[in-house]
Length: 617
Image 1 (cartoon, rainbow, N blue to C red):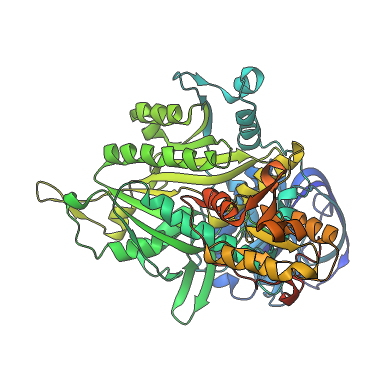
Image 2: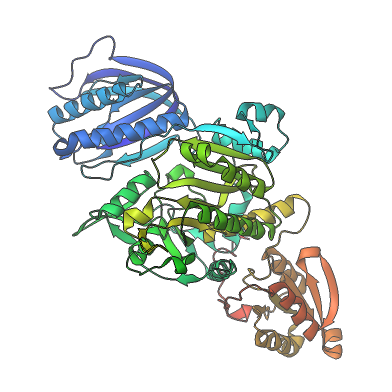
């Protein structure tokens, strides 16, 4: 079964003539219809659906219910539509499936109108323009069970311990960023849209969609590759700085759902699974490092003396995000997740080390001169029985937080924290996260020998301290856009800049001296290039600025005579004449405590083809 979901501001249809001899009988009730704020479900029944119809209908109903709740539509129009597939079921089977789906939707409390089957119909449709207004799905028998919509109760928790209704906080609260988060999460307010400048900034450095792949898959040009490698190395450094033993591993990214823990964990994850059919059955592409790490660690022999310890991997991760939600560097179908799992003895120890992770999360975003606002997803039993733990976390944030309270026992975690920045479009953008997991150790058979010799199951912290690699880049680029809006030059940290220094000779006459400068910088481990093209000095300087190069070094007659360089420092728009050794010290100061990824382009611009993303500048 294939469906196309359209959240329509207005929808109208009218049956014109029979398309099939066996067309369904029509009446005044179903021969036409006119609707507003409606979820239109264009539906195609395919061959083979009848063999697993009950399961398919249940999964489709789950999905329709979830979307209906998210978009806030008042009703559903079930509209037979044969154009989503060439593999059509027989008319009798199709009508039976449509009637069963209609009944299932009504049994779940939805207001449903079904258009007649087997008729040519004219329709008029006006679609809302938000990210969830156009969604397509395919359902087959034997698929994973999709997560049903979960009802959440929202409160605002102040560091004082006071609990405030979100509506009241919107009226009287003083944290404007938290209000934006509340508006989006609780009241589903569509915040101002537009193409974010951060997408243009990412494009500038070679982060692009790959048109020959699936939607939501990116490619990384030479500059973007340097940044990805630098952030990946940095993520490992951050993890090691926690002060606990950490093991780095690598693994595969396809896991077979015939294994019970894989299927159960995937079903808990929800409906954004990337699924692949092979000769061995249905596989899910992992959405983080969990599957591989847990499958590996279940074979380890662990004592209570070994705990806590961490396991880390930068994991290729896949999430089947909807087309309207995709955004360069932020919402992707394939991305890199620097995933750390910390194995602890029990909930108390998990909370203790969760606070350590929390401090590191805030420390890292602070280095970008940003602050997080938090959404705490907690189970009802955790909120009731461990409110003091929750309050300690909120106090650790130093500001009020939005708390979503969910029914107990439906997820493997008891607390799941989303740390968001309010980006340059004044929208919430989740970057970092951590969870406390009380279910997966038992599910995957990960056990340790307790002090009394009995077998126990660890409590696991899941965290991406700096967020996914691409989302960290998003935060960096969004910070640069924020600088631009304040009238400052947009910059990125020197350790992340693909080219950290550009050497610019005033004319070809000074190429030899420019090469001397280049060689000294290269020997110091700095990413540097030389603009040896026979073009004007003004154009060379302008292009260095367009590429946001932190240090532009101009050399001419005076610099050659004094063995100095004239350096333009982008971050503060300053300019000074220094010895080459002093320039190295300036750059090295920026690089202190950060990894240095290798350069990915030739040293000489004359030997570099015009990179497609730079040609657009």
